[in-house]
Image (cartoon, rainbow, N blue to C red):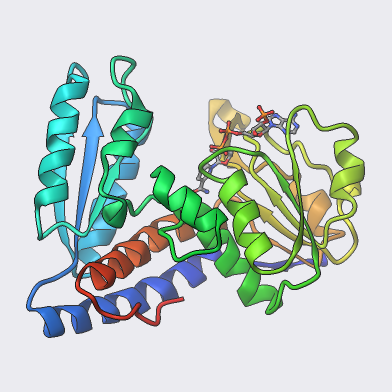
Length: 295
Ligand code: NAP
């Protein structure tokens, strides 16, 4: 391996410590902690694990957590009613509705019902529009975490060629918007792109957010490139076990890249740290205070 291994765990820990300090300061200025409400509908095991770890991080940061666990048969009207109550609750600065929602609920309608000022996932059309217009917005946590790692590694991104593989609303598109705002030259590739290896070979910065285990091979990587692997894929391992791999073939890519995030331990830990950061930022904005210095 020649590439530097980008330690997302350490970066996330440092960010969470800065957020915790910001929380204490916010509480001393306003007399209350920032609050994050989580909404889980149904019993999807992966979603339950995510929501529990978000709740744990909330408490560890010194924020108030409000957990709402609803049954899988919850109607859209019931969920919209809860969202309206959370929008009106002054103790709540951030609302996280865990996706995916059960089939009877239209997630776009639920997201549109969130108060954009409390939309700490950054999925509300107002926040999506503000991000693409270059205005202050609440930005989706995973791409914001990727940007944090990239800036820590490279400093200025201005003029660099960036390729984002994947165009989801959660990762690919907001990642591209953030990179444009940093003055990178951005290409977005997806399943219909022709000559994906050729496109990726141009990248000084590669962000892979595809969901296909080890799809990006070492000989696609430009020597010295910075590689951010968002993918989390579970694949069979020896002894009937399973293991997590990214969208990039790590060992091959690490022999060519300048720096690379591992999976696990790269982008993953940054996502929850950024959720805490977004909640602290939302609390400041709602209280009419300037943004905290957390990044
Ligand atoms: P998604 O909504 O399924 O989007 C995947 C994207 O990859 C789509 O734009 C798709 O293109 C593109 N794609 C699929 N096959 C391709 C191919 N053969 N060549 C080129 N592009 C291809 O996924 P997502 O939500 O963005 O997540 C992507 C990955 O990141 C998943 O592994 C997910 O688990 C992981 N993830 C991790 C975190 C974290 O915290 N680390 C957070 C979110 C997601 P089309 O649009 O043309 O279909």
